[in-house]
Image 1 (cartoon, rainbow, N blue to C red):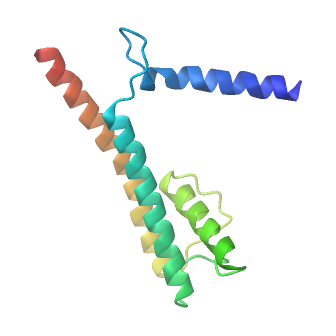
Image 2 (spheres, rainbow, N blue to C red):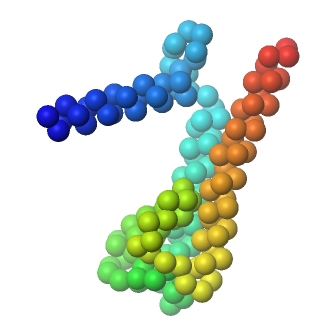
Image 3 (cartoon, rainbow, N blue to C red):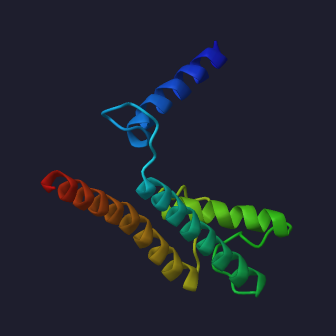
Length: 133
């Protein structure tokens, strides 16, 4: 029963995403270049901030409480996790920024709010330009 429920959830999620990746008129798969751009910008920012957290931690500057525990791989995955949770404004609270890490987290969270806003503005302008022509 659990597997059926999970398949159903994945099916519903894929249907909800189909509007983003298909052309409404022809229903053919068509991923807009803006969607690729949007996803690549998010990944670039997420990885960039994660590397910033990791490099500062490796140089002895504590920016995230409890980030320096474990081996290098654990620190890398924890840095990616912290960056993702901050960028997407989730913030579970299991990692807490300290010192300069607070400023870095604020900048990353602000960036996480700006990216979708700029994406929507760009798409709306494109659609408005397309409808006037």
